[in-house]
Length: 402
Image 1 (cartoon, rainbow, N blue to C red):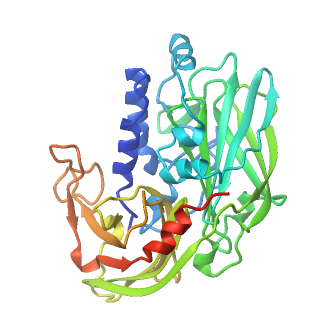
Image 2 (cartoon, rainbow, N blue to C red; image 1 turned 90 degrees about the vertical axis):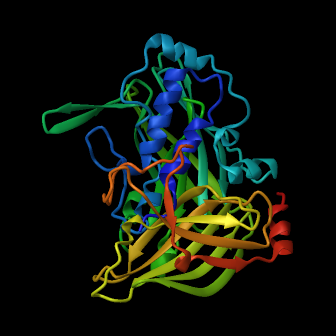
């Protein structure tokens, strides 16, 4: 079961870039936003960048964004110079299509470590970090001469049945992070669930890295505690020495946790909403999904979720993860991460739906779109859950300032 309308959200994000972006770059970014969910995070050698197996039910959110695929072809030196001249207004968090990060900056919840390292005339910096106890967001900026294309660019060259990735100078080819001195690659086991993604912004020289800790889904000790030391080791194409920066991180916000046991069933698919979490930055939904009848297994791979408020506004998806809790793969626990609400609602509705595919009868592939370019959906009313919210408490949380 894949969580929410990820392709649609990413496609829309690509369509709302700054008007100064050249048409060729806009088209390329749109293509990437639409395909990010299906791409693995890889190094130049093809080795996974600390990825993990995720369940069919919630795997799309965990793979929501990827390092290293801003284009399938190099950008010319002339175009690279054009990109450098594009006016960028505001901070990197303001460039992201993420109301939570924008609000964090407006409320003074963002730390500004201003950590930077320079090698061979190229400077890599971490100007902004924010952590709300659910997700850690870090801005990365690149500056220097002799750079070609964007910080996330690369192209894949196919040679027969194999392929290899080629990166322009200055593009990220590898990244390793350390929590209190321990590499997060060591956390990629069933015992401790760490998930991190790379996300582009409208500035080709800036991107976001985000971490989420899903250890609690297996009732394990959290990797990301309220306070820790983060070390980042980033390798750029054409630069021999890696860029290593170390910054302190601490939780900057409070949380509201709402336990619930609302259950709905559609055929043999049983959905139980377990918990809601709110911060001024993120909204999280924890749920259990069970196949109750072994003889009538529902194909849950194409059941997606959306979150709506009482004013008919839909939240943007941030990420998520689902894990099977037994070997039968009939019971799983998952958590979906969404953006914050624009303002505190009186109630929240979790909607489940199945998208239609372009090829009739298909179970995967391109989605069928209507005349407005929106995915054609069949909503599953049997799985819909509406939860009342304490508007006063949530308003107070949303208005919090550092």
